[in-house]
Length: 112
Length: 117
Image (tube, rainbow over the protein chains, first blue to last red):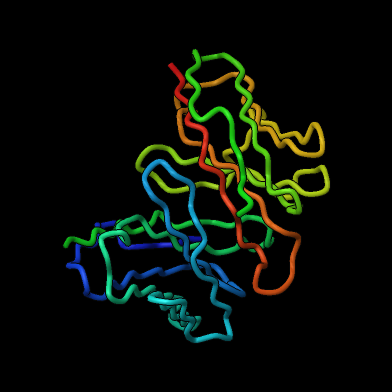
């Protein structure tokens, strides 16, 4: 069956450090992978999309890598801030292409 | 910035009652979705809708669920006879058709919290 796995344990880091979150997947052949942010009680918000032919994508303090051989994406937040505290979700298209499936997410807490 | 609007924000209902959750997608979006998130669990796909028909649905989306686009702006999710396990946050989402880097990037609403007693 298709699986999207993210670290279930919360990640606690100090302000200013780099946070690195991992997404692994099985039984997907994605053309692209997405990362979303979810705050408590709110809907997910799109952050970044990376295509299968892109190794790395950057947006401000965010960086995403995508390794289709390892079936893994890494999501980095550099110079982290307390406002970055949230749950970060990895998402992949279903094989039909219509549905977007999410991992359970990794909770990030940035402390001053 | 355009947004997806959902109503109600919170609904409490008795088991066995029918519930309708409403969504107004972004006006130029053509694909519409419903997701649910049980407390502490992942965001789960329920159904996608395009051109007035369901394009894909998950195992969760059984005969108790239905979707409708009754007019040019609203998109609704109906649960015919609610069960305790239907208690969750329900998110509506929409996206543009296809193309470019915006392919399949979803914009979500703030959600409707359903509590079944």
